[in-house]
Length: 163
Image (cartoon, rainbow, N blue to C red; front, side, top):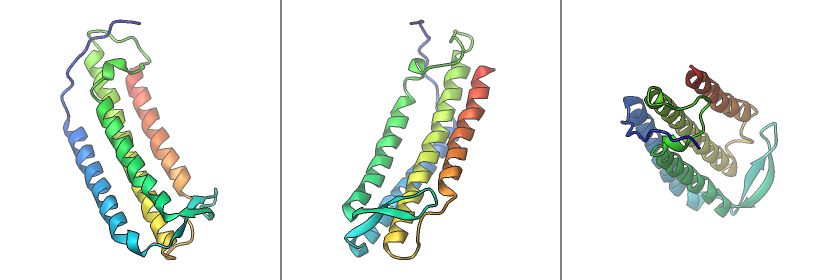
């Protein structure tokens, strides 16, 4: 394995904005979940088909997994920020390009972290609305939109990292 420089990459305004937005969204989704919890039926839709229609049901306790998983992913992606020298890169890392490569990879993680928090928070909101009978499904556009956002971010940053 190549010896890569270990650099302290300062947080940027973009990262601070992403973190603040993600934390606010995460906290609001947890508060919303706690507020709606007592009124949810014992059995809720927990799986949706490709058209966004519910096709699997389970205990409302299953809905606890979404905020827990969101928090876990947020914390994991936040901690990864500390070790950009361990990431896989498309170009060899040198003293000259290390800061650019590390910062670019960290920005990509920052965008992905925000997108994941938004996606999981939306899913939780949609699941709750379905359980309350206020919606019938999560919409056919959710999966394509989520994939476009995530893969769009990856493509943009892969292009940046190959420069």
